[in-house]
Image (cartoon, rainbow, N blue to C red; front, top):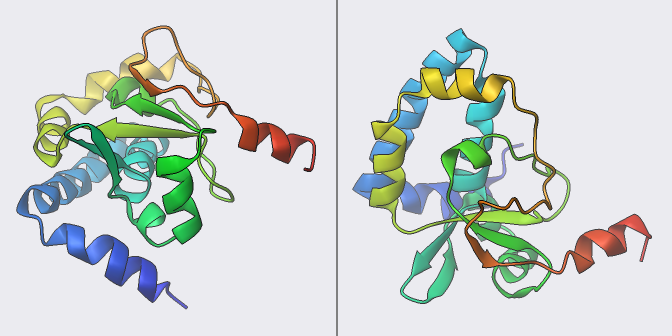
Length: 167
């Protein structure tokens, strides 16, 4: 059975935003190309960290926009208020290498400055050479902060550590 709450309250409102709808259309077109280049996994990470678990900076505040966050009260609070996760500035190359969790709260969220900027960054880049560049690079563990990352909030990773010890 489909998750109606997730779709109706998470995805549908964003599709009413013309810029975000254009982003989704461009993403869909990009999916065809990614399939032909064997890069679906990399493109899936872009979807995960934007459409499902994205944060947006509005003035000095962070807000949720990803449908996966919106449809989970617990993750909504965790994503915005918990000290545990990292919140990093949007970086397409970095994001496409970053692992994610499908069974628990994220330990890293990527923050966009606007839907216009997200659309621009994904439309202006030729994904073919990007996929080729990333091909030889490994994945990045979900809690890792790299030297070149734009760190908005450095997480304590306390939530991840408590899961490791079963607390």
